[in-house]
Length: 250
Ligand code: SAM
Image (cartoon, rainbow, N blue to C red; front, side):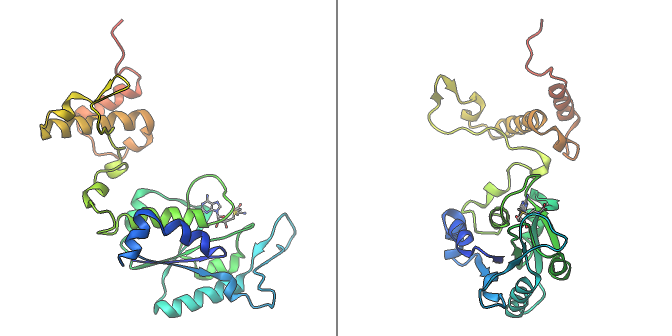
């Protein structure tokens, strides 16, 4: 899969995505991640890319033309009109299903804003998707783009060594993942739940599913609305929501 990140800070993006699992997948040719410097397309001799906003107000705005020229050069290189994601606090909030949908693309272009953002006119011409990483404002689109590239990349076949580990994770089926334990069996007087040592796969699966329901009801009850639960599981979730679960009888 090919990722192109239009940014004023290419080294920030490449440093962040060049290590660990994503870095290894790039070296192995499963991913191609390129940061494209918008400043290379500045049309003035100082290579400045920002200016004051019309109408006044604090801060500077990235100008339309360098962003547009950068995009045009990229589009020519890719050989087709790509999907362009503008990272913006005003976009739709990123979530796992979105990551799954983006992972089906062959190439994705990310546009990172900085300062007070980007001249609206170029956004209207080139952007296909507006995506936010949450209801807060960060200084630039680079970290949000890195988060998206990471979340999408790990869904590309072969990027995670054990492909199964991407299958049973939080948000699959609108549930959070069950708690996990590794050696030793006892740590700080806390024992690994007995069922996990039993070797009985059906029992383990049943326990994990129940734990997922409990955890989701406790931490993210909003997800449950869309979760496909059995009647028994729905009842368990309701008990948690009502605060009854685990309470000792009076
Ligand atoms: N003035 C803009 C507004 O109020 O909508 C915020 C500009 S922000 C300081 C600069 C850049 O950071 C944005 O253009 C965007 O690319 C990125 N950014 C900031 N917060 C973000 C978020 N929550 N999700 C995605 N991108 C974000």
